[in-house]
Every structure is written in C-alpha cells, then in structure tokens.
Amino acid sequence: MDCSPFGAACGRKIERRPQAQPLYTPEQRARRDATPWTVVQGILAPVQFLIFLVSLGLVLRYLVTGDGLATATTSVVVKTIALYTIMITGCIWEQRVFGRYLFAPAFYWEDMFSMLVLALHTGYLASVATGFGDANFQMWLALSAYAAYVVNAAQFVIKLRMARRDAQPAYPHGHAA
Image (tube, rainbow, N blue to C red; front, side):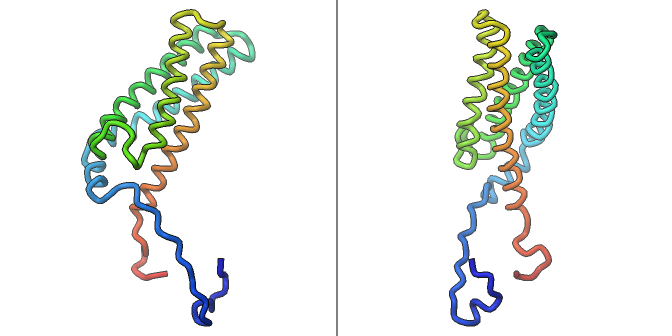
C-alpha cells in the first residue's frame, strides 16, 4: 500500500485492485426489479428471522429450565415451515432472475450452505416425527440447525450489501476520486 500522496508524481506505479464482478448483470438486475418474487423474498426474510428469534428463545428456555417442550417444538416446526417457504420462493426468484432454480453462480455458495440448513431442519422434523433421540437431543439438533441458519442468513445479508454497493454510482457527486 502506497500512502504517499506523491507516489505517482515521483515515478512509482500505483497498482489498482481489480474491480469485483457485480452481483447482477444489467439484464439480471432488470429481471430482479421486475419480478414480484423479489418483494416476496423481502417480506419473508425478516418474518422468518423474527420467527427464528422467538423460537430460539423458546428452545433455550426449554434447555435451561426443562419447561415448555411442546411450545419449543411447535416453534421449531413453524420455523422450519418458514424456511421451506422461503427456500421454495427463493428458487422461483432465482429462476426468474438467473434462469436456474438453484446454484446460479452469483449465489452458488449461499445455495450450497442452504442445503445444509435444510438438511438440519429436516433432520429435526424427522427426529421429532420418529421419536429418534430424546427431547434434549432434538433441541440441540434444532440449535445446530439455527446456527447454520444464522451463517446462511449472514451470507445473504452480505450479498444484499454487495448488490446495494453495485447499484451506487462510482462517483456519486459527478467527479472522479
């Protein structure tokens, strides 16, 4: 890093970092902005997060006190239904914007990690439905699913920030830096 304001004037070459690829091509951005599935995702994501927060509190309450197993279990089931809903609608959104239901290059790693999140949530449902493991095992499985969900949600928040950054003009006040 050359911090000297006179570096280029005295013969040193200033290396520019290559610009990151934008998240969306102009065509993809237009499709993203035109599809109603973008609004659906924008509504479902915070709703799912609120369900997650309530459910997390109920699961932790059960693990600490031993009280409220039925309520905690119901909350995890509701959270899992919300997850399935956002995943299905997200696949439709991805198809409308990128032309494929999953694993579009712009969201490849987010989709890959989403598969782990889905597997853990589905494993929880299977455990409850079959009686596999005791209640503590099931609640810890729910917590592992929730930990994966938090990582995945963070991935998507980072992508949202990238998309907003890409939408900003390079020189917002009409002059070069």
